[in-house]
Image 1 (tube, rainbow, N blue to C red):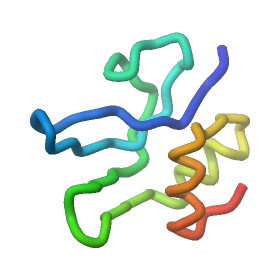
Image 2: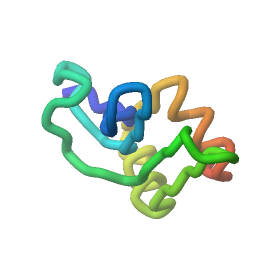
Image 3: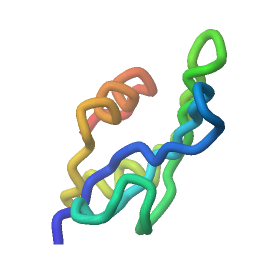
Length: 81
């Protein structure tokens, strides 16, 4: 089972809010997830990223692959693999 760290879209139309989740790569974007490790709100100025660093580092160490967007958010938050 390949595990990805990716964004799960929430919020209203034209006002997205995202949760940073760990999920099986075969599951749908808004489907079942394994764990929730943070949030991302692009509607605020500046964008707000909240990440549980300990959980993120644990999942990265266990082989979870972040998507390109999540990798960029982790870099902004100071989380390195």
